[in-house]
Image (cartoon, rainbow over all chains, first blue to last red; front, side, top):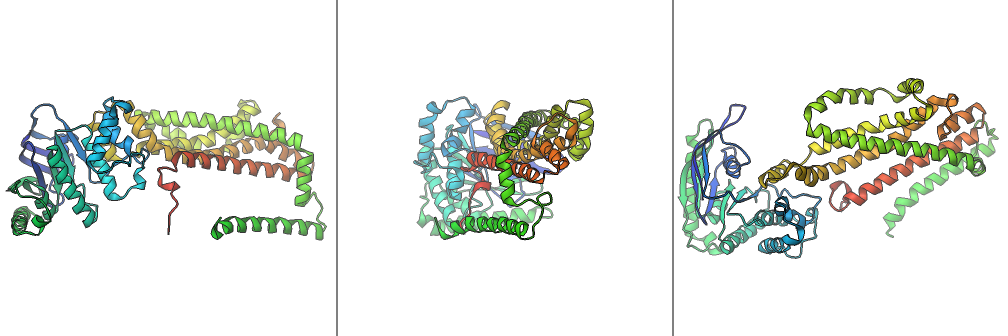
Length: 247
Length: 261
C-alpha cells in the first residue's frame, strides 16, 4: 500500500534522524514500529503522512494517499464540541455539517462515543479524548491509519481497554494500521508485524511476525505464545540498542 | 446559597460598610471642614444635586473611552492579523508599537494638544494606551495555536483562510479577550490623563475636567463625586469584559474552570 525505499531524513542541525529506511505497509496489517525514544519512529510516520519531507529515498503510495493520523496527545480543538472535532477533516474538504451527520455518527459509534456529540473536550476523560481523536482520524475512511504513540499518556487500565477496542475496530473495518510505540507488550498484543528500529541514525533493524490467526484476548495476553513473542521482541530491541553507537 | 457563598459576599460588603461608616464618623466627630475632606453623605448629596452636570461629563468620558477602545480593538486586531500573515511587517512595525507603549501617555498629551483639538487629543491618548495590549495579546494568541492541530490542518489540505478561521482565531480568542480587559481599563485611564492635561485650556467637559475645575473652585465634594463616577466607570468596564469573556470561554477554556477540591 505504501513503500519506503532508502528513506533518509537529515535535520537542518545536521542530525541524521533516519538513514536508509526500507519499509512496506501492507493491506490490512497491523504494523508496529517499535524502538527506544529518539530512534525516528515518529519521523517515519510523519514522512509517510507528508507532514515532513524526506531528504533522500522515496515514499510511494499505491493509488492516492489516504490516511488518518492520531497524535500522541488527543489534539482536539478545545473550543469545539465532539461533533465539530470529528467533523473537522470533512469540513476542511468542504463537506457541510448536514452531509457529515451520518459519517460523524458512524465514526463516533466505531469508538463507542455515541451520545457524546455535544460534550466539550475538557468534559471528557483522557481515554475518551483519545477515542474522539481516533474517530476524527476514521471519519474520512482512510486507507491507512497512522498512530503515533497514541496511548502513551494513558493509565494501564484505560490503555488495555483501548488496545482491545482498537483491535475490534480494525477487524470490523479491515483497516490498515501503522502504530508507533516504545512498549514491547503493547506492540506484541496489537500487531501482526513488528519492525524494530535502532537509533542514531534511525533505521529498521529487525522484523517480527505475529500470527494474525491467534485471537487477541485475555488468554493470549497471559499465554506462552505471547510471552515467547514478547521475549523475542525484547531481545531484538536489546540488540538494536547495543548495536547503536553511543546509545 | 451555601454558607461559603454567603461569606464570599458578606465579608467584603461588611468591610466596605465599616470603612464608609468610619469615614463618616471621623469627619463628623472631628469637625473636618468639607473643603478638606467631605463626609460620604455630603458626597452623595453633591452627586444627586450636581447630577445633570456630572452625568453629562460622564457621558463625554464614557463616549471617548468607548470610541478609543473600538478603534484600538479594530486597529490592534487588524495589525496583529497583518503581522501574522506577513512577518517582515511585524519586524518593521514593532519598534514603533513599543515606543508608543513605553512612552508615558501624560508626556505625549501636551504635544498632541498642540497638534489636535482637545477632544481629538483626548481620543488619541485613550487609543494609544489601549492599542498596545490588544495588539500584542492578539499577536501572541495567533502564534499560540497547537502545533499538532496545525499539522492536522495541513494533513487535510486546509486552505489558509480555513486555518485562520477555524484554528488561529479561536486559539487567539482567550488572549484577545485578556487584552481587551486590560485595554478597556487603560483606555479610561488614557482619556482621564489627557483630559487633565488639557485642563481648563480645552473645551472638554469630561469627568477629569470636572475634577480639575472643582479643584480650582475648592469644591472638594464635587471632586469626590466625579472621582467616584470615574472609579464606577472603570469597575463597570472591567465587569463588562469579564462577562463577555465568560460568555465566550466558559464552555471550553481552562481559565473559566472552577476547580473542585
